[in-house]
Image 1: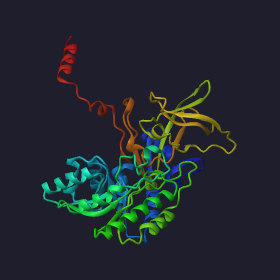
Image 2: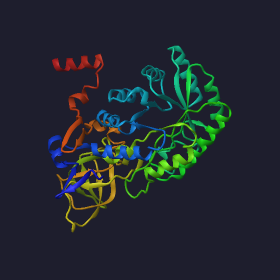
Image 3: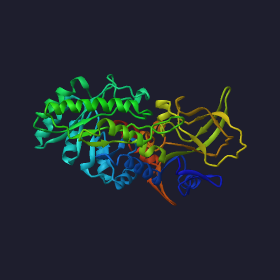
Image 4: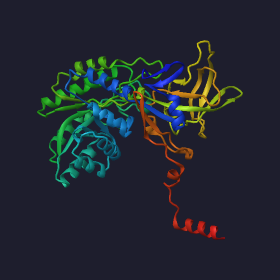
Length: 429
């Protein structure tokens, strides 16, 4: 969180005090640092500079148009997993020829939208999907650029819910069938076969799983080429982890070196699809303490942000750093507390037994490393208004997604005619 630092006892986002944003926007809110996004992209770009690389930001991590536009301006393409994300990438200025469409459940409408947009590549996750894409492409008179996503059955040593390269996972075509599937795809007239894709999971903190997966991919490439089948491009996915707490992920330079050693000599163009790595540390969620509750066994710090704003702790038992906006004095004693939200779920807990300095109602807290899988997973659960999103750029800031009002929340619903009629009769009575 180098772009978020204390100055004279107050936490800043670049050159903007977070307390000022809280006064002007209200809490809770997300804040992204443009400098943080830029720094991480340049770090990744520099690391892979010696490889034939294209970097496609994974929109599932954060699909805010301002964030995607910032990365597009730096040269990033986009990895999308729905027609909605495809439209967001295009609207944010990502060229269609730098967009990759992944995911196991693409509908006919989504496939056609991708083909009409003229994107770089569709990653195909099953033989049934291959047949569907071939049929749809021929129907509209196009050739679909596709890559086969293979499942290498590699243990990524990450949370089970974000592991994607094991045999029991729903993603990709298993290695045992990939050769025959690739050969069949090469003979389908509606397809323009580009190569192979792999992605084994998210928040990986070791190089060994990457090496194993990429090694198996390299062996498959050699086998396919020996059979006279061209493999022009390898999509290596994303997954490089960050530090939330005590993790020790490999540097992006070491990751790039592992790529070079395993697949760098195959003569293939390489695609990378980082998400979390680029944006997680560049975002925070700012919340205000509503009250302190003294329980029988625990002291609860109740804040105005909830699991509807940040789902990761409830969904994955994820750790996020938490800091007070006002820097505590050095002599402040830390005591374990439960940091919880207002949602009517016990799972609405951001931290358990977290050592924090003394806090009181009205204090501001920052939940760190929320730039990825934060606002993008938010909902209006409990009919709560989702937190707005802001971006800072030096001393400037902008609201890049406003907080909706209650009229917008209620306006999503429609009463059926019979209910509206009863309501009108009640008013007349």
